[in-house]
Image: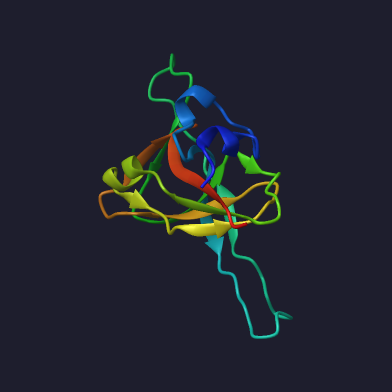
Length: 149
């Protein structure tokens, strides 16, 4: 397992390294939250495949002096896009995103998922019946990387 410091070498877009880097992970921060607006579709062969469409939600400041706004999310599914991108994953390395423990305690979660090197990655966020407020740039997920060699 790579250390948090080693993982930062594979990432771009880290907001505040001192806060985000743990012993064996890097916390990922939310850049955008989208609401799904149109269904996607998939078939066996892929010729009829279409991605689900979504619309970016705008965060709202609680007071005029706030530097960052909040997304007030109701029960449902949302797409969370991260500030960070994984661009330098090497051959023989495997990465996984999992929900931040505080995200779970706030009434939301996303599935853990394997990731590959790409410009941006995202997670489908499930929000409980009571809803959840998420502030811009908050830490919502954790990235861990293993060397498989």
